[in-house]
Length: 110
Length: 119
Image 1 (spheres, chains in turn green, purple):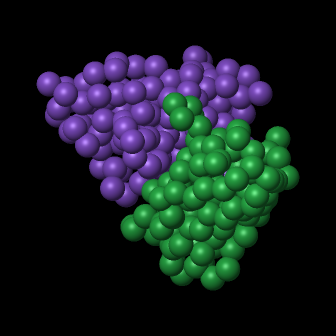
Image 2 (cartoon, each protein chain N blue to C red):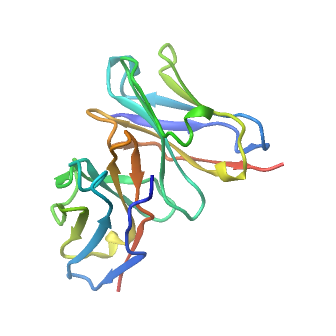
């Protein structure tokens, strides 16, 4: 199963909005509403941010939102803050009955 | 609040079996939830290994299934991972994970433990 495609890096200034894309296929992202997003600060464990395409996990700021169109899912961070600097990973259930991840996107706050 | 703590040898020789334990606190494994493992090679992305439900259903990454064994010790409230015939490609931080409702994602994560495969 091929990994999902994410941009290697995305940056923005404090207060701006950024969007991270996650492109798969009809056999994963496009075929199921089982996309999730994780935030991983340097040296720490991942934290679930979004599940089921657009549901925020408990305790996650409403500045984070998820969406999907066709075979591409997206994570949008509004009102970017310094604490949002981290690696972000998308994941999806696949028609093979497995989970697949993207390679990760490094978010930098300028 | 579920808390997960991984432990095990930090160094394993090639061709041997990697064995890790995840101690669970704040919840009884036998009461429910999905429990599993993920890993992350140094400087690389996440990889799902396997997940099981307390009732017995288990889901495996096909690329690892032939080498993976999951088990549960309800008396100690622990789950374990064994990965056989390891190579340098198995060097990674291994995370214990859990979720209340599904195996498609994981809300709870341990802090992770680094396992290096080297002679």
